[in-house]
Image 1 (cartoon, rainbow over the protein chains, first blue to last red):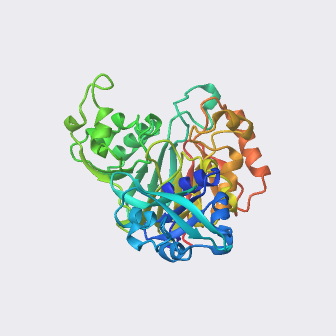
Image 2: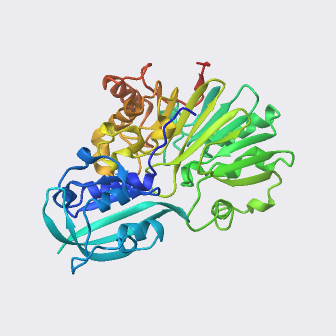
Length: 131
Length: 283
């Protein structure tokens, strides 16, 4: 079949919701690829999504050198987005991030998995809360 | 591939002198392939007359593909002749639900107080299939079903066979996903089923001015339907799921409106009419 694979409808709807939120929000698909973040997240990321494009979520997260509230490196397995992707459960963490614009910011991140139909994991949503 | 429209009305049947040309039966499409395979898309009231025709032609096996279980896409099933023929087999395909199986959801419409006969007591053989998550084959045909924007679990279908392709998206409100016309096709609801298709049957229930008061009801304006056809690169568009308040004269205005929108489709858009037959040549 000659057609391209569409994003799952749940991701399409999540993107539209995120686009209309003032809360910084990102979306990753089931394979762990960052597929979208909204305009509100630009302040934290330091750049717009159109400048960055789709990329592996781990690579995206690591670029912020996330640290604990005590400024110790945050272990990968404590990253809320990693937990939501791999363990498929909601997670929340307060941390410091170094944005791409060079500014150190204290934020909290809540990430949760998205399931479609009965059991189909389609991706995650991550929400940033400014501390 | 041959496509015949047995019902194209949306929401509720509308028999009467005002709807003679477009017809009053609710959604039902027959797709016949060169190898004799028969697909029936949706089981609106149009399926009753189709069932009689299948019986007359001695067709004993059909694939019934349901887009969703709203009544206007299911209400004719209880009067579908193959269901009452012990020699007939229906392979019934439909969307998954988070809670209840397809079979149980359909059985509800065959139970008191809605209907006196239990589905399990009908003599025809029915095999239920919850839709695969990836493309699959039936005979020579390749099929794909994809969830689309409409209240409740709803899919659109793409069928490729005999060298051509058809996409059936009768109930769809892509406008709820924002400015889809400016998105890449992988971000368009139903993009994988409608992309570059030879024939697109798509929801165009409203004029744009009617849509304003019906946002979120799950249907498209004619403007949105044509924008969608352009965005996915459909070659030919048939506008479907006519509003029950729209007379034949109103539908002619809607067709003219569609043609005035300057679409990029190869052929001018047309509104679906009951009895319409579309032959799709091999490309």
